[in-house]
Length: 191
Length: 221
Image 1 (cartoon, each protein chain N blue to C red):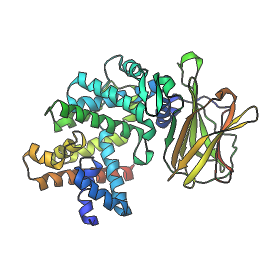
Image 2 (image 1 turned 45 degrees about the vertical axis):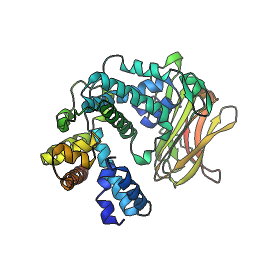
Image 3 (image 1 turned 180 degrees about the horizontal axis):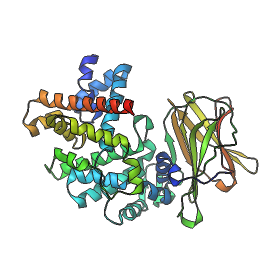
Image 4 (image 1 turned 90 degrees about the vertical axis):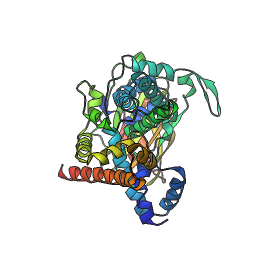
């Protein structure tokens, strides 16, 4: 007989499958596990809680409609959902022709104190390592990387936004991402 | 395009900010360059890690109910008639592309862990059971939900050879019910399907290789 185990034994992939099948209970658990992360990202990009909720809701609807297209070779369920959220938030920004980009979104990266148990499970050591790595970057690299990673800005757009040459913008993004990669690798090896 | 030129754009592709013209050229190079593809995988993983380290903010009260209400809203389906959210998706299949690894028959008796999520509607419940390989290794899990619709989901996270595996359910009346195929790649894979079998009568879920041999089993009863 199967024996009892903690509810978090149900994998994110299985919950996504349940959501995609139209299973309300699986959908509820899936939403609970990711809602603070999805809403937090949308709000960080949009700086508008009402619009952020619209985007966050739409992100879960996209997950429901397109769950079958999820490919684990391209990343985790969480990363897939957050990429959807980021792209929706960027689209919403562009629709409003808003220029609320704030690369100091870094300031919001500190883990909050009121997150749920489900979200706490996702606030891992790895995320902490990434935050530390981001803070260790030269400020100009960090800003360029944030503009690309969170606001979807191209090198050309970063060049204009930061009033720097295009080549400099590309270099800052490339060095920033490479540096984060290196620091993450070092942290993983030390662990 | 050579690897040096490609390498100068991989970070922008990983961050999904590479403009269309250069993106097309880079994707063409990647098709024939495993080395650059590997580097792209690493940078994409880093880009994902940035998003995963992003802000975590509790949404306004009632958020999940509002999302679920929208999911229950009728919507048109491509190639099928419209229906309610749940019913329209009753026959949806869910496939995760992934890797696999080999094995032989299993039938281990130990290590069968189940997970029961409380609060499911109508007395239905989730159950998750470990998927055990012939050598006794934990190589994934099988999740079930005995509600409406009833579904099974098989997840592989362990060493099986790349390839396609058939997923079957053993029922306590002696039947073996096929529910689809799992494509395993590099140790990962998954398959889910809505089924018309009462999970309470399913004794095991198995993965079969091309020869029909059982390579992994999850015992549900």
